[in-house]
Image (tube, rainbow, N blue to C red; front, side, top):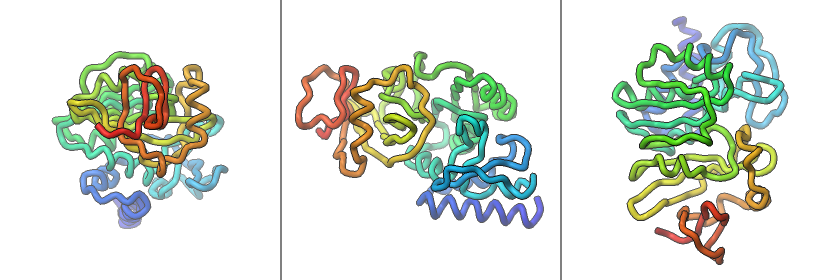
Length: 278
């Protein structure tokens, strides 16, 4: 590693720490260690920032260009990117992963953030990653073949049953938290899911399973590729489009049958994000 390249990585981690407000050493070490260039194809690369919707091209194929807090196009026509590092670092940090934990990842793309997760949970932990795009899944398998704690599955992560996991992280926008994900959570397990309205704007919720039910909190708004447009529920879509996660007051997720009342923030037959505490 050249001095210039090492400095680029140090700057990258410093950006992630500052912009993502990340302080967990395991997370920052993972971003410093995993080679981003392994997962995004050959350069020059097409990149964009969080606030700019158009892509620009890097000056050369020097991988140092990848160590900035930018998105890198994987499929520019669909605006499918290797996501914004500071954003995903902050969300991964919120999961509070520990070495040895087992994680289910829905939507792994070509595997960059899968490698980050695998680095955090270590050799005694495991990552089961599901990707619906056949080409991306094949690339992820190739790029991650040297990691014994990673399994890549090509399939629809919304329509499968799973064993028990300590954490489930969803990298694509959905209209509701799928029952299979909630059922897969071990006690004290965390589900992180972007609930998406029309387009790509959504609210990321973190749902924690307790013995007495599910705690829930809104983390932030973000943009994510919608993966279940065919399953989107129109009434939820309309509700999600207008609500503010900061002022939502959501404290729990209910799965019992009940009539909507003043405590229901987002109510449907399948689930309810509620202002009530467990």
